Image (cartoon, rainbow, N blue to C red; front, top):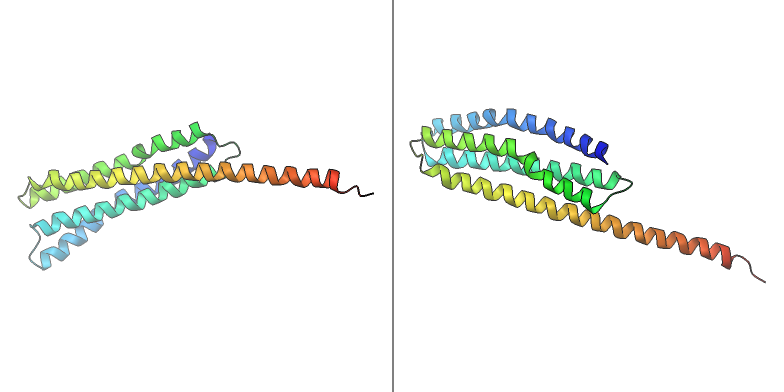
Length: 172
């Protein structure tokens, strides 16, 4: 199971690096657009940065969920404790991106001359991060429960098939 989680984590790390690298370019494009409209040092820029960061967190959250679901589906011996270990790892997967987003929001709030806007915007990102963590936890736990039920159903079906062949095949 550790090999599967290591593979999943490696894919997540690679995507996180891409997202971290793309943030400055996306924010730069937003700032150029707002500068052309005379809104560079405004709340629109700060809210735009929050939207870009929120979208990046969503993207990373989807990837974390996909990769951890894949690991759960591929594991031969999936246990509840292993799934909970994955659930506990989710906040750590989001933390570097979240921290970079907070830095961008603070910087843009300072540049706009609205440092008091930063805490409210950061709170929005924190809520977004917490929602993602909760959604992933629920989805992983549900995936584990579905897998466990599926295995029990398959074992029951297989056992009935064997019994049928053993006892049902001998007709007088």
